[in-house]
Length: 210
Length: 343
Ligand code: SF4
Ligand code: SF4
Image (cartoon, rainbow over all chains, first blue to last red; front, side, top):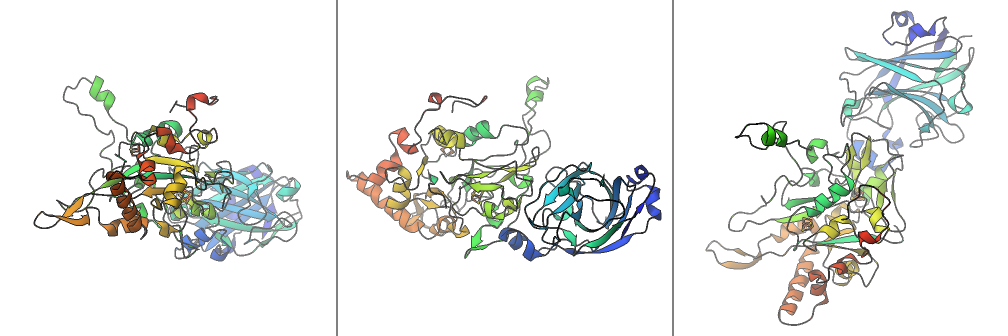
């Protein structure tokens, strides 16, 4: 997919903004994160007979202005969960490789880490996360990360934004560059959290227009 | 497995269900925001729903060494903290006001079915079961955490949650077969009994043990042959873990309850405990039979004027003998934390 270069990125920071409707959507097939890759035996035992990760697709759009990247992701989620009281919030994440060739489903490795932005419906919280394998995620460096989500008629739409320029551990991006993108979404109503999620099975080419 | 392991033995024959332990723990450790409905120590009537409600049917733990699926207890299963209309009744000007919960009738709470028990008259029965985290030798909670946020201390076997690493995923709540982990909605982290770590480190007994008016709760290290724990668990083999079939190897043990004899249809006493042995086996495993026989035998010895080390330990005439190496008085420890009681 391509991240188109635009002049005023600010008008793209709202997921409901009209400007997004003229951007082409790239449909990504999603699968439940494999049970065998879950990090502990108890998680596997508890979830082996329980459906999860049922979002079948995620639509991705992206623009940048040479300094800031915006990624628009939407997916179907019949019932909204903002994670009130003891509930789990709906959530989404986008990932880029940091270096090497990280395997998306196993969330990278120490030689080939990946960097993520994770958004949660609870308070529109957006975190920068560095992963070097399953269960290893740590706070990542600041990349002026931001996220804003909106839910309407069974569809979540979230815009992630971050600076292109970034420290080495946060996947530096630049206009003209080709990299890879991966996505994950969590259905809070189904108590999905951590590795219990829907993921794009593999990376998708991600080209930042020069 | 840790090099040393602290443990507790709870004598169910002496527990009077007074909840002093519950309050000692509550005021010491769970009196902050987000902990309103949280009791790291509970005392429930058996048989009964327990805390959280029907926890024995919520899975987790291991079977034949394999992790078992578990259900996550919800706040409603533990019971919410209730607000009472005390202000209204005392100062509201209505002479007929009665004290009650403010937001409608509560649905459940810890110690909900107090003294209801089981069996049919005249063979009805009940007893109390105090529970805390068992600081298991094979903690299912620790195995379940994808963040490695739960650890077992090598020096004393206490199982702790590192809340800096906890992300509130609560897989531990699913995995713990004793459902001894709570979720703090204010901090967004899992919390549970810490075996009074800051006290124990200073040689002071746990608050629940020291405050217990029934002298019910023995403390010590498992391998300390002179301490009460080793004597009750290994030497006399009368203290048993609750639900050993969960395979987490708990380090809280129970002296099973004796009871008066049952009556037959004509009202004659028969040679059968009022507490059905099958029920006790369902709680403590088949070893409960021998444990009760040993206790009865030693009690008879003592009655007839003989000596019984086991009875002397269980009677615990000297209060401090309950606590193994943890006999330091709280007042003798430099207190660095504000707001802690002199429990
Ligand atoms: S009782 Fe539960 S919370 Fe406590 S150590 Fe055992 S498994 Fe963990
Ligand atoms: S304080 Fe002692 S006697 Fe009272 S409920 Fe607790 S364990 Fe039982």
